[in-house]
Image 1 (tube, rainbow, N blue to C red):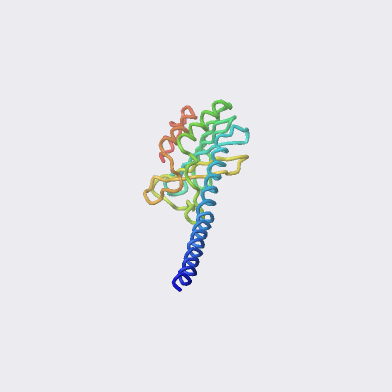
Image 2: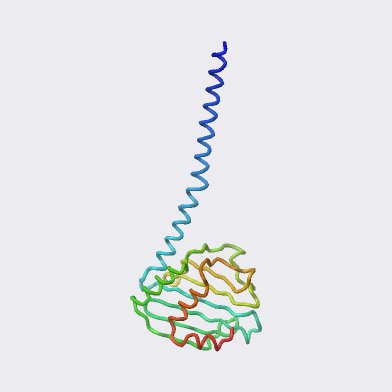
Amino acid sequence: MRTSRIIPIALILIIVAVAIAGLISLARAVFFSDNTSQTVTQVDVSQEALLSTAVDRSVTLTVRGNIVADEEFRTYQIVVTPTSRTLTAYTGYLDRRTDQIVLGNNTPAYEEFVFALNRADLVRGTELTGDTNDRRGICATGRVYEFGVLKANTSVKTLWTSTCRDAKGSLKAVLVELTNLFTDQIPNGQALINKLAL
């Protein structure tokens, strides 16, 4: 009599344990494995784009100053490609070009530069989406720094940060290290940037 009661209870417990183990395995597969592989793929794609020396690749740094009157608003952009290096200064919200330095470049120099950017974790951050990625009006009394990796003038990855404590953005690298790498690509570029008085 006792044996006839114990066997069905034992079978039910075994079935419940197997079902719980199956559900846990399924949950892990759905919620953890896919997300990890997607993140790794995204990092690999942006890193591959950064390290490529194909002629259609470029990296950019854009710096926006304080939000002030149109006449006093200043920005600058550094664009480095395998064939050129450009620093452009702008005035006003319509980006009137006020000054520019244009220099040539070569593939070995570009390769060293992008590998240095990679070692400085340029693409380590994750791009923000929606309202969290809207940079309009943020850090009104400071500077906003935007870094881009492009292929054929189309953004592969854009990360940003600012000097304001409440707007740290998506960049996960050391800002000074990255900005120095960019400005060092333009001899006398720092003098032009200093004239902007951002």
